Image 1: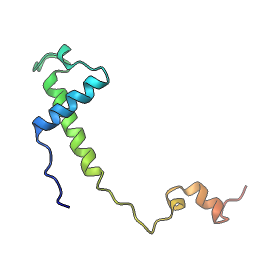
Image 2 (image 1 turned 30 degrees about the vertical axis):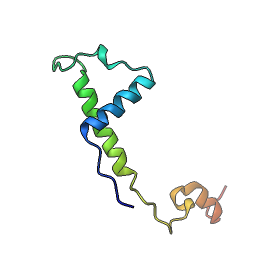
Image 3 (image 1 turned 135 degrees about the vertical axis):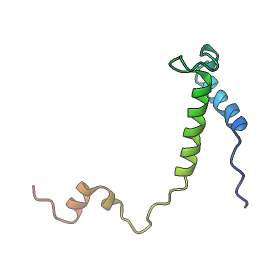
Image 4 (image 1 turned 45 degrees about the vertical axis):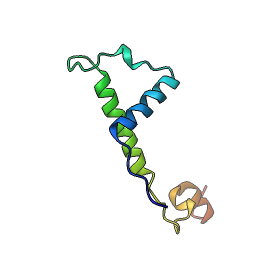
Length: 86
């Protein structure tokens, strides 16, 4: 199966606006592009696109198959190995 191309900014904008609308966020209450405003629509969209693209790259993380779950959590491992002395 071929890997699909990454989404364009326009495609991500549609996705972001839809997700915001579904949770009740109305971006139209913000100025469109105002550098003096605390936040504007352009910066919200830029930040949201950046976050989504980072999440996609993090989704490619593959955990070490030989690492036992206890190694990731030292407290249980010390109990399982008998190293814990109450």
